Length: 536
Image 1 (cartoon, helix red, strand yellow):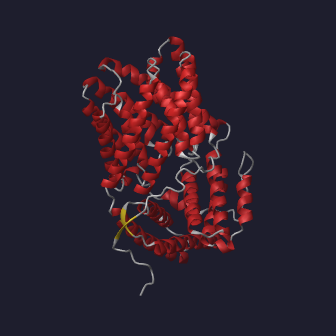
Image 2 (cartoon, rainbow, N blue to C red):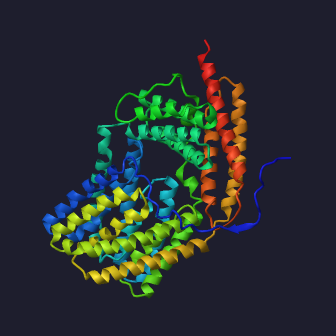
Image 3 (cartoon, helix red, strand yellow):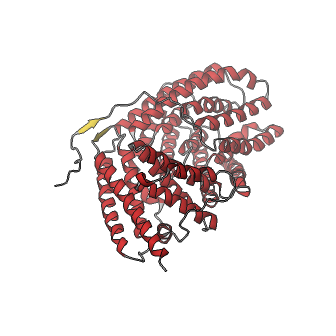
């Protein structure tokens, strides 16, 4: 009889946290890159419009320029594709909003369109794992465009402006590759080594989850980096050492792992490990058929439904209260939705706090911004930089800059009464956060626990197959790939289910044992291949 903890069948309600929600974290290693990139992408178009006296067109140029916020952690080959997709997605969302605005003046219809577009953007961004800032910037632009006075004849020109500035943002995002072409891969590998070293020293569940995620991120980064140059092969060998440390932490040398991580800073040579042969796991991953992003859409259905319902209800509530900009409430609701209800609650608290402090900052800055159009543009650029510089520490801190920036953007077409703007923003923030969270609780994700059970079974099957490979000198391509994928799917499923509102208890002990056994088997297979490769 198995001693594994069974999956509890009694539903339980999880407490929603308050402690730690506003705690500041450490900034990203590259926090300055998105912050500088967005300034470089936004400044030239806005300054050109300022010189031409057409700041009323800034919303369309900023739609393309804000694409520079994305994909900074991706290798440059993958970044080129991701940025191109973001630009096209941004222009598509803007196009839907502008066409809808030109065809109807019904605010109810426009809010409904905005909610549906937000749900699609949320699902696509999560399925493709585009990364921060996710769907929020896309939804902000598409929702605002719904309430911009528009005619059909104006739409092509406005979309052309967004596409042109999107191309400029693409160039800005790709430019650092000229100076440090392997920077993203080196950083991801260094994070994996440091996380593995931390787990080897402190074998707690949190450290384990962090280390597993860092190693998987490093693998995905390297596998999406394009041609396997000698530098990337050396980085792959270091990631293997991190994975071996996860499987056998007692045998790992944390100081050596951290030393390798330090050597990856800058542009110096990549440190070499003792084994210099081919990497079976990498070859298997590359040989296996790639999973398409649309396969992830099914599990995301509850999140998409929450987004559509929450955004629609928030917009309708704002209209009922007579607010002139219901898209603010819609975007607030859209910004809440994370992988589960607990994370959505935390984001809601952060959003409300950040926006309320942000309107106070706007009240303090607006006299300076109203000195002239140039001052308005410069204030927006400063808040663009501040938002990205602070967002990595905590969402609420970055929102302190996002809120006044969004309010100032509404004044590009003409100055408005500040007291009314502040009142409307506060009301829409509270309405959007409250209604959006209620929608998250209303749309349950009961299948999350079932997916954990399915993922556990898949891990066991994949581990058994990988174990059989130990007796084979030349394993079939893709065999280890199944084990890697199963472990990733298990971790993703557990993280999603662990914070759901009304969910049966998860088999945490079984999950920990399955992850440990899976990594032990993968590490043993790698060692076995080393021994085979070392034989004459």
